[in-house]
Length: 130
Length: 125
Image (tube, each protein chain N blue to C red):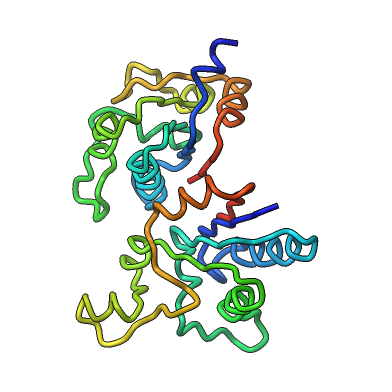
């Protein structure tokens, strides 16, 4: 089956991101396909490239990156929700005159239309929210 | 049986948060508007504290967050006219449909299940 995940919880603040990663691992282990993880609401903080959690905690950013590298899963971030929360890629940072950027590939900023397209195009869209 | 035909649509957005104090309602409505702009038949279900979004006469006042009442008025322009609310939630808050800004059909639990089953994509906020 083709799956997509919608993550709406900030990393470390709630269980949502941890559960989404575990669910992703479980469905991949069963031979399903994970097309995309879409980050919305406070879930966009999962894409903050400067995240530096203590070493004895799971590194969620690295886990998402690994998921994308190993399984070709797209990591899409709602651009409107991201910009409000200080998450900009290089292009948006320069457009808004900011001196640094906080989002980089494999995460990509995209519109909510992608979420709708995705939801209608996969067999299951599963939401993880706080 | 006819009710089930009425309830069918492409995208159902479930709104469970009140209009002020968090961005859940606003970001949920944004998703609904985008889905409609993409040509999908969108239905809204107001559930739990989400029914408070429908209360008449709301203003954001001194709050830093933009209110959502103006967005609700725009729903018709986006052809979002299938509005439903959880009758139990409304009663629990001591409200009646006369206090609402927009006409939303009250649904009992079995109809809510049919509503969810009748949509291809369900987004919960």
